[in-house]
Image (cartoon, rainbow, N blue to C red):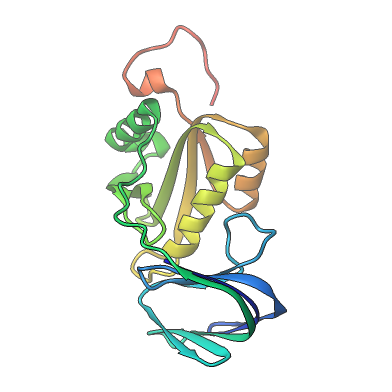
Length: 219
């Protein structure tokens, strides 16, 4: 991984155009070939990025990142404050909480919990930024990405949003909608999810395991 902190401006040209004026930013170049531009005020979400397959051409004072579709990110560099490379090694993957992992397994086995006609495509569907918990199709055959949590917070909605942004670039999958599924979904997370067109589903662990509850529940 290469980390470059530089004063730069960024211009994107592709399906639309975007411009970031000159400022100090972090340029992140990963071993998978991806390049992303970060500021200090947006947590983990980049200002602009290019996912692989793409290539980086470096010239004095200018980086150009381009993909096969002809999209380009031109980074004009005024000054470099830091430039370092780090070998991170193999990623062992995310080890999930036992209950959360079991929820994923149970929901995959009973995918019609999400709706009549739903079919499973794959658990842990791989993407360049990590695996999607479940990829399935609804009754109309459209792709649906499912993120599963024990407790649904805003961070989980943000995670699913990033997956959807990436999956919707794949013409074989697009359009892809999202389902945020959890045993408990916090009100702020539900508001954010619905604002982004993501459906929220509350999961009952005992019901998925086939244990009938004595308590009346309204979903």
